[in-house]
Amino acid sequence: MRSMALLSRIIVVVLSLSILLLTGCGSDSTPVTAFTASQVSGKTFAYSSAGSTGTLTFNADNTWSTTIASATFSGTWSITNGKLVCVTTAGGNHTITYTLLSTTSNSINTSFVEVNPADPNNPVTGTATFTN
Image (tube, rainbow, N blue to C red; front, side, top):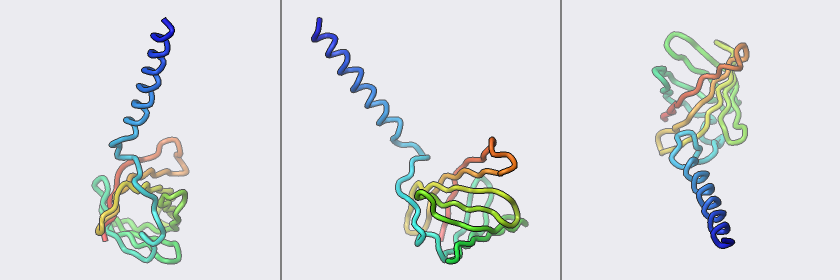
């Protein structure tokens, strides 16, 4: 009887650990590594996300700018907790936080969360790719 109870506990622990490990595998939102300043500072990227495309320029003085369609946006960027954080100071009032998913020699694949301070309870999420 005692051995059956012990066996049941072991099975529950093993199954619980397996579920925890499997839920983290294969998810598109799981970062593979952290952003570094050298990946973005002084670089210009072609940007593509959910039907929007443009050219993003990340300056060495921690400012960025882009034109998407007929709208021009600019602001500041930083690396915070391994994530790329872009704050708009012209052309809008949003904070966009990019999480690095994967990199190749030519592109950076990310997920993003965009928050409008006027409506912080309704963030926009999606994926984006920066290409050199």
